[in-house]
Length: 130
Image: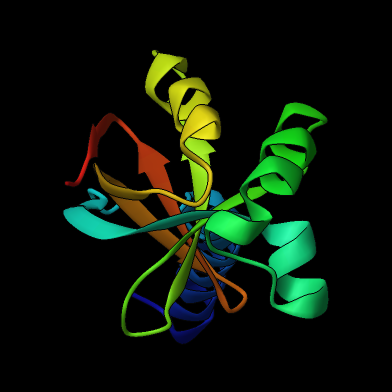
């Protein structure tokens, strides 16, 4: 094969490879299966908890009102970690039931997701703790 022909073939192969790169780059990374956990803690309304540390039975009525009005809900563990509680897209009943448990100790089971410093917990099952 002549030197010119080898150069032309090499250039065509290089050009084809460059054209294929965007197709590979566009593929999203493989989705990881979310980690299932069971976490025990107190249901808090995040607006009052984050603003002025309100929690516990003395704040229960306010928390019930805030959650009913759509304030975000969290789960505060005994170690001080707070999970943003999220509804399961297929079954939002356990999440909605959790709103009535403001200031109470509950056990939540579901997948955990973390992004930008926020840890969310999808409420798949909810159980009151005695």
